[in-house]
View 1 (cartoon, rainbow, N blue to C red):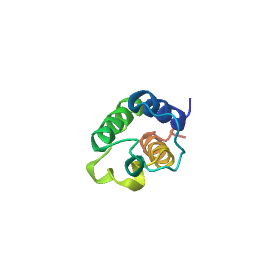
View 2 (view 1 turned 45 degrees about the vertical axis):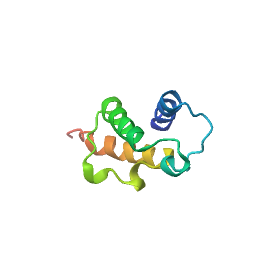
View 3 (view 1 turned 90 degrees about the vertical axis):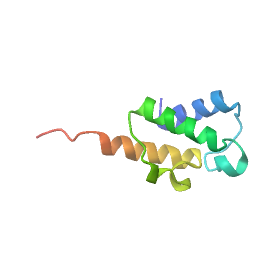
Length: 85
């Protein structure tokens, strides 16, 4: 399952919404409130095994499905060790 699909499923299951597009702002549209954002951060950290720093808690990283998916993919890629040659 892709990062996007896993995040979408979490949002649908946790916040009881199923009709939103990938670029829709979670906060402006009311899909997720500030407390819900912390739930999303915890989910990302637990499921994807990354640590999100306070300085990364920005709308450009987490305020839509597209942004959150891209952010998680970057974090996972950065955390993945490069194999020795």
